[in-house]
Length: 187
Image (cartoon, rainbow, N blue to C red; front, top):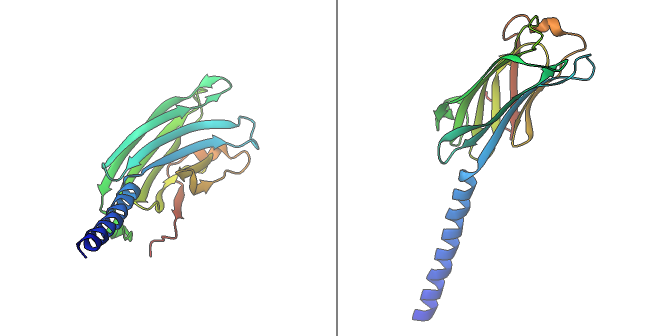
């Protein structure tokens, strides 16, 4: 009986340890959040205008910039480039309706054509990412160009510009952004 009891306890311990390890692994996952602005081929000066990518690790409570890349207009590099990312709150998303631990990030971006006479491309997004990969976005951006926000290559938000709408760069935060991944919606 003693051998059976030890074997049983070892078996139960193994299952328990596997469950703990699986939960820790899921929580330790690093999520990649990316904001891309681009002018679509329907316009004469199409191409990528900015890419802003950050890594979020909920277990370590860290975010780090992976890269910021900017585009060109007629071969002239972009100008007035200002990009920032910061964690606004760790495990504080219950007020936002998330049932799990999460982080609230703020991603802000600004770039402009090197041609100098064109206004800035601007965005200001609050992005929420939970430990199980659900995500939400709220914020705003200009009415031009196209904006694409992804979390681990899953589309969180997508805004497509209309043809020849460069004048929508004038102004600030003209378009409200909202999107969800994983079935969560704020009530």
